[in-house]
Picture 1 (cartoon, rainbow, N blue to C red):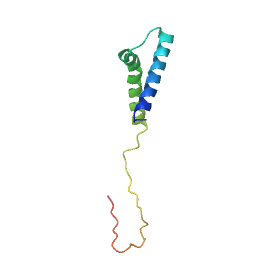
Picture 2: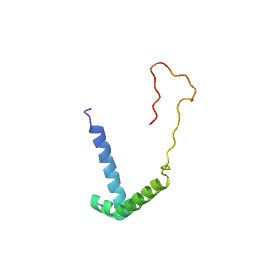
Picture 3: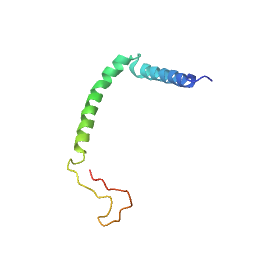
Picture 4: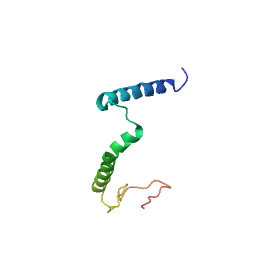
Length: 84
């Protein structure tokens, strides 16, 4: 089977199922532009909510220096500790 036929077949089945659901619930087919227009208010609210949530959950800006080696740990030959 050449590549892409399985994906195309599944997309065709999905499109037919969507058309069937639209016909059953709306009594007509709905185009992509109309579907996007109906979803747009949800997307706007979701972007605003998501942005607010990220701002609230943002870690504090203050940073602390963290030592990765004990102060009195012996250094191996040729290895320097770099603190940024």
